[in-house]
Image (cartoon, rainbow, N blue to C red):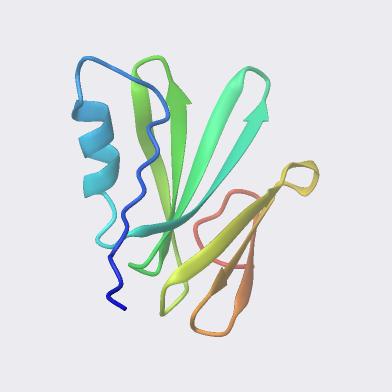
Length: 110
């Protein structure tokens, strides 16, 4: 049996100008493994976890996604990310066998 590789792409917002999509893709050096969306006070924030061992925070708006911050601390693929909005905490897990807490919006793990 021959296995075929599959590629799945999610388009968050359709735009005639594809620069927003290409901008977000070019800021990670590896594939995106996980997404988390936080919504508060008419603001949407998207977190992307990647095989480049980083998490990126994006402000999502009418003009497209804008990179706000890069979280560094894992040394291998980041496989999952979750937002605890009540505690202003981001939780991530990685192939480096760690779970990290990122408190208060800082780019370094707590």
